[in-house]
Image (cartoon, rainbow, N blue to C red; front, side):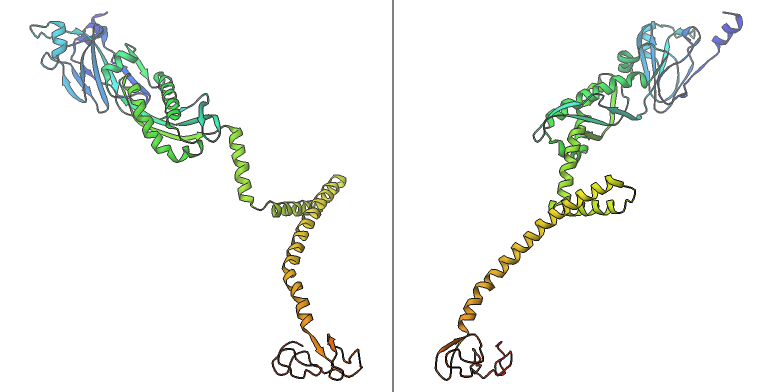
Length: 358
């Protein structure tokens, strides 16, 4: 080291860190020969913590604020160094700045399907994804358990471990929740809160805190979704007979509007026409059956009415059925009488006295 470099190391220094990248979690302050002079100014900003490491051992942890590094505000490091006189010579130590803000919008998802036993579908495979956020809660634990003595540490370096912990814990939770697959969508908020509480101990082991956790979607296997789509479609269609008539009519219309269909189009139209004829024939047969059923009471009542329309010949007294103009026995002219009030009907269709039909 030249004389100029030596002189530079003797000036009172300012120890601080401004973020160079949003994903950097830990930054080691570069000091020449790792020498920090007594009286140096330490600036720790909001959402930061400064960790002093002496000979591989954590000496002090500083929160946000401004500090002058002396024996008075560095009791642990002073004891480790056995400084009895408070001299101003440099001491060797490492300073690590730890970012304590939240790392948001971190995505998680199941790389492989999660097996689950459902009451309705039996064993099924589920996929899920969502977002979460985390931050450093205990810088000293984070240093010991995760980043060690690296000069720089980013969130990407630990994100893979966190995702695997999330998927493992979520798989256990879904199996124990015992919620039907079709009802999972209505329990996303409850499942998210439950998962956050169950995953927190895993994050605490790294000196982290799980700030938020959200389940955005839990999807069923593709074949199960297709089956549900068909079931839903049948419910929307309703009357299959009317739907078949509609489909047949649409097929005939499409075939008629397709002049370039050729023989193939004609065949499609003919097949659709036959199908429509069968469906319409069944509908007409059903309608006729209903008409016959409705007409049966009137048919049974007609003989009674006809039987009651029997008159006696005024000349010979023989009973005469119906409404003939002359008696079939003696040839006498028949008088038309109202069967309700007995008035003379003449040639009218209704009784002139009571209005009854002749």
